[in-house]
Image (spheres, rainbow, N blue to C red):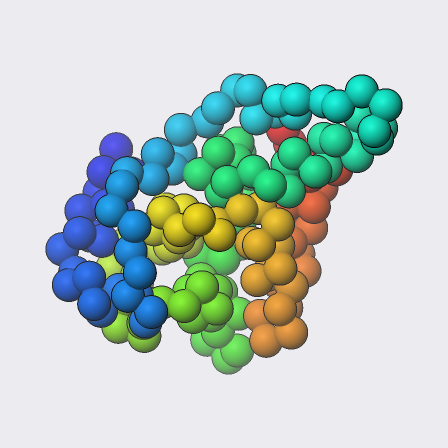
Length: 160
């Protein structure tokens, strides 16, 4: 239900205002659909590395739309809370993802702005856990607390 409402908000905006770089991929994101198989690596190559290395590698390359919803929810709880001094929330993350200022301001109209942002970003080929961690650790954004949630999941700690 939330997915449909968020996609309604997104599709109502002129496409050229959403992306600063205007490269929207026209396909459903499938965001929020948890793939139970993503909780363990899909393939292991025997003798090449340990299972923990394979788990880490598999999870780093996981598309954001395929992350467990429990992890997405934790991220959203932290980034939905607006930081009016430094904007180190969904707004700066959206800027780092390359979205236009108009789109970022419109995210506030969504009940779940971070989830809406992640849904749209998940349409891009670079929307992986590894790239999301890099964006969160960027010196301007500096959201190590949120990056830690993802890193713990990558390492197989905490929520799965």
